[in-house]
Length: 304
Image 1: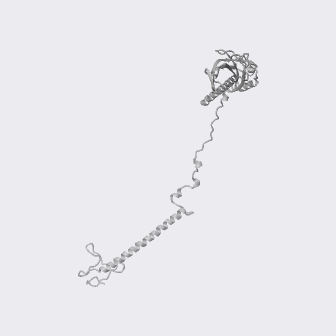
Image 2: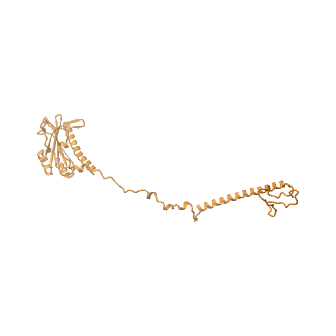
Image 3: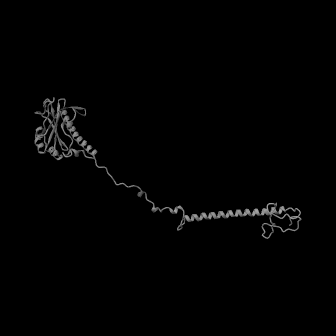
């Protein structure tokens, strides 16, 4: 094939290494081929065919190269997965830098431990009224029996005279003086309460120890009677008439009651008001001694 009438020319095929290509003299040339003689025109059909062939090969090359790249990437991912999960293979990723499970601190090791503690047992109020060594609070008939009257249930008792006797036997009668002196009684506190024509005298014998008070209570009999206390508007009672008496103890205190009529009548089994009055005053005396112990126990607990 010739490029016109310029004489014979060897055809240049861009895909044949032995074909000849005319040199290009620079930007002034309009086409990268030899124009020939006398204005010969290029073979446009041949050039179009060659250009199409080159474009087709380029597309095939790009498509083929992309497929190879995809295969290469998939292979790299597979190798990475095998390297991460495979046994006996080293890994340079962050997971290789984590400590083994056995090297991590356990929850029990991280949790603080505390030595078992227990609160001290509460102080027993009775301990503070069971010996003279602990029972140091002020003591007197008006401290143990404060106020001017006493209410027990629906009954109101008026407070009468009080007494504090250091010679215990002098404030007792019958067999009680001997019992008190034999067991080391140090004081006998007395107070009288009235309600109508009924009067009750309470006597609280003070000992150094609980054992002495308990022994005195056991040794007392039906003839062991505290001497009734009159005066201050309270007439004499239980001096010759039949009266009712009680005996009990709490801590280092033994307490006694004698109750009867202020008009001198004898107490009988039908004298319910006399029995009630004696029981009320005995109960109140027990509560007051116990409260004395509670107050001292509370003060000792607060002091540490």
